[in-house]
Length: 357
Image 1 (cartoon, rainbow, N blue to C red):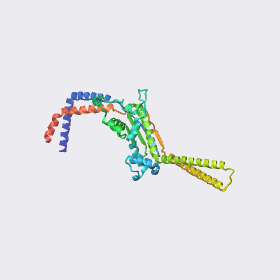
Image 2 (cartoon, rainbow, N blue to C red):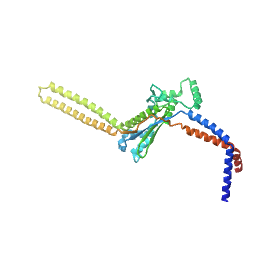
Image 3 (cartoon, rainbow, N blue to C red):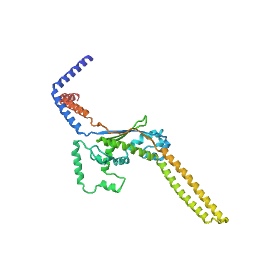
Image 4 (cartoon, helix red, strand yellow):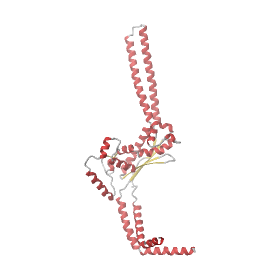
């Protein structure tokens, strides 16, 4: 029984192949047409390059992060107090959150870039306006532009942006989302390496933004990690400055009194002189103590400043990452083959559906 079923299957397969060979010209025509369409599509899509930077950040203990980076983690929805290995988990979670944040993207937009065929530096945001798109996107873009040109009155989004500095217009959101799609941050969980990748149509812009982006990321982490220590340092510097002024004032009062009453040895004068001298000494002691505090605070800032090692700097890519032209052409050829097969076997498919029903 099983042999009989196998023979039937072999016969059906042979008949299937014969029918396909009978329509070989149709397959050739359809696959050729879809292949040409695939070539047109593949060469119509603008080339996109990518450049990456690999960082090895310092991995400290949880206490070394202080209040600054903890507050940053809280904004990203991360509770450091509930982490077992807080520093490792922090590095695995906080970096992608920073990279995709609106604040970071807005800073990234301001970076000056020099496109490949340009002699003038422009901002990254201005460069994005010059990027090309596939020809089939032009009709929708043109229609959108025409509709926007008709709105000559003040845009509602502009009013909101002027009234509320925390609001962003649709145009601003468009650029932010565009950049968010181009930038990625991958974390290697085993060794904690950070890979920052930037995509753009210009290879030189890729390299520039990748390099400046990693510097901006380092600055963000450094600022937040040392925030509390820097606040303490500023506080002690102010106290030291005030104490120094008080000491100088007390010193001048003592010197002035001593010079004015140099030849007078009355007990009251001596008592006044001793009092001023003691006040001057107290002011000096306060000043020296605060100076020591400043030195300690400076050391604390240095201690909490993270170290970053750039294992792989950014480079100008020589080969585009996309589109994969050969894959696109092959996919279109396969779609043509499938379409031709459906057309050839349409009656068989229809009969099989009727039989099942």
